[in-house]
Length: 116
Image (cartoon, rainbow, N blue to C red):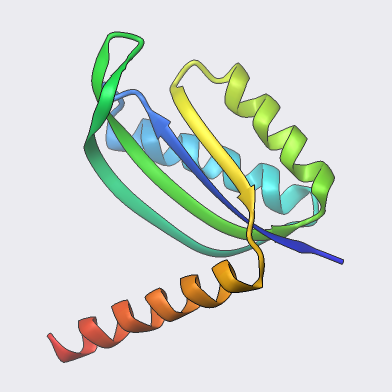
């Protein structure tokens, strides 16, 4: 049984677009190589942090929603900790209500794009 997870990570603000894409692809590859399936991803871009982390006040945020076995999470988080580009990360298992809410938000977002 695959659980659905959502992971958000923040990278240092000094990365180029290419470096950011490489980091994202690295983490997506860890998920897919371990039998996971990526459902949705969003690049939230450069945002101001609520408080300084490692003397940085901004960071690039990226969200990945995926289905995977529980063991994948520990592998993913070990890689987050090893990568010096990552300044923060959070991964959590989504219950049925969070899954429904995320699907509803994606549906609304796609409807708004069609209208505009």
